Every structure is written in structure tokens, then in C-alpha cells.
Amino acid sequence: MKINKQLKTDITGYTFILPNILGFLVFTLFPIVFSFIISFTDWDYTKGLGNWNFNWGANFVEMWKDKWFTSSLINTILYAVAVVPVTVFAAMVIAVIIDKFCFAKTPLRLAMFMPYISNIVAVAIVWVMMYSPWGPFTQLVKHLGVENPPQWLGDYNWALIAIIIMSIWSGVGYAVMIYTSAIQALPQDVYEAADVDGANQITKFFKLTVPFLSPTTFFLVITSLISSFQVFAQIQIMTRGGPGTSTHVLVYYIYTSAFSFYRMGYAASMSWVLFIILFVITIIQWQGQKKWVNY
Image (cartoon, rainbow, N blue to C red):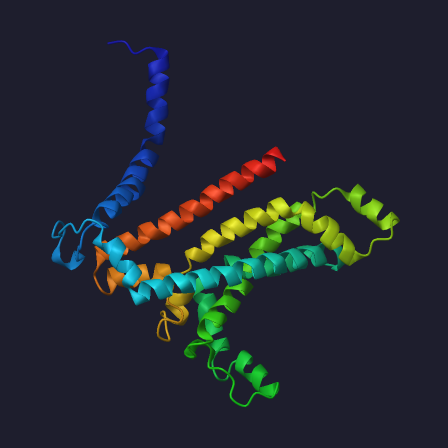
């Protein structure tokens, strides 16, 4: 049988992409479908594959009565609400300051970016030591006159705040790099006109820079929100969700439910709730991108 030239070209092309297709089916599509199925079961994976009973949505009802789940969801929201705006605004200010007033701009930007690309485990361990009783944070508070400084990671009221501070520090460098690219593309003739009109730096920042950077800000807010709802490594290394439920976040509770309590079905149902939250945020991002493109 003679194969025509077009069919031969098609077969060659599909052969090249076949490994990627197989990888997607095995490592992405199958786990998604499988997690959706087991989310309606009470599967304990230590009892083996297939040893489950369908409870038809009982997991989704139970989680809203579960103190650990509700606390984890609230902590995740608080974490995101605190980290995202502070990181984005601080990054905008830092990017503008470096661009307008600093020498050695490239080394400064690289230094800002290093925490973001560094291994999160190593960074978390360093911050655990910084929060220790002999660490710089505790010593600084003592020098400011506080006789009994907070125990930071060991304090129920301060542990999540300590994680938030660390996350802002490690994530601001990425936002600075994104803002730097956007700042370099701003129309300079508008700033020159503002100089002629006698506008000072603060006025130009709030009246020109902030509005010009609004599409970039929107992008960073959405992507940072998605990243914040997936926070895990900092919690795992620094606090393991404690003290109590103070730093229990959604992804960490999904992890502990699956691999500590062996409730794989319950963990799968919570992961689908997280998926729905991230899906809604992504839809908002798509709609927002269309707005900025049309604008």
C-alpha cells in the first residue's frame, strides 16, 4: 500500500508529539478524572485500590462542618489578602525607585530576584532561624523595648503573620522584574510634559505611573492570588500547620488528609473545591485580559 505524501507528513508529526500526548494522558488527564471519581468515595488508600464505597457527595457536605477545613480556608484567604496587595504595591514602588534613582540597577534587580528563584526549603529554614529567640527579629523587638517579644512561629496569633512576612520578602523580586519590563515601555513624552507642568515625583507616580501600570498590576494580582491559594512549602517547613490551626492552609490540609489520615477521597473532594476557586480566579483573569486588550 502506497502512502501519499500528506499522510506521511501527518504520521511523522503525530509521532513527534506522541510522547507529549501520552505524558498528558497518564500524568494529567488520568489523575484529574481519577481524583474526581474518588472525591465521591470514602477511599482509604492503605486498603488498596478499589476498596472504597461511594458516598455520593457526603465529603463535600462534611468539609463545611469540619473545623480544620474551614480554618484552613479562612487562613488561606487571609494569607492571600495580606500577601498579594502588599507584594504588588511594594514591588511597584521598588521598581520605580530602582529605575529612577539608583545606580547599578541590574545587580539590584538581580539581588531582589534571588529569593524568588532560590530553593524554598533553604529559604524557609533560614527564616526559621531568623524567627528563633536569638534571631534578628526577636533581638530587634527586644532592642525596641519589648520585654516579652512574640515567639513568632510558636505563637498562635503571630505564626501566620510570620509566614506572610517571609512570603512577601521572597515573592516581591518576581513582581519587581515584571514591573521593570513594563516601566521601560512607558511613554516618556507624557512624563516630560508633566515635568513642564511642574509635577513632582509623587504626583507623577500616582497620576501617571500607577494608571499606566494597571494592566501589569492586574496580571500580578491574579497570578499572585492563584499562587497564594497554593501555598504549601513554607507551611510544611516552618510550622507544619501549627500552632493549632493558626497556619493550617488548604493545600496543607489536603496533604495531611491524604497522607497522614489516609482519607484520599476526602482530600480529593477538597482539592476540587480548591480547583473551583482557582478556576473562578482564572476566568476573572481571562475576562480582565480581554478588557485590557480591547482598551
